[in-house]
Image 1 (cartoon, rainbow, N blue to C red):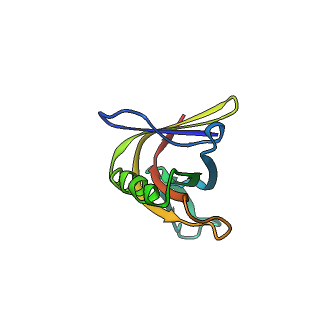
Image 2: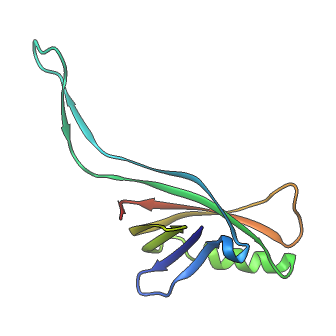
Length: 133
């Protein structure tokens, strides 16, 4: 799996790549929309109407080993600096490519694996998503 984020007006950044031992795990990928529900006098069922506003979240974590423990904090600072950026996110898994247009990076969290220590760091990313092609 490979994940590339390109902020508007910026250059692409790799947030995960299994080929480069930058392991990626998808935690959540989903969406929802608004639906209007109306009761009908004497009706057998309620009336349902679509109201659009399709959107959701894409949450994943990636981890890799850095040159030193100190370098993990430098890298986290760089990732934290991406917060609130809008752009495009591209996920490639084998021959399948998902392109998320107009995403916003909502959250960046430094996470740890109890079985690893020192220079290994994981980061959980949360993107607000709307369009997937």
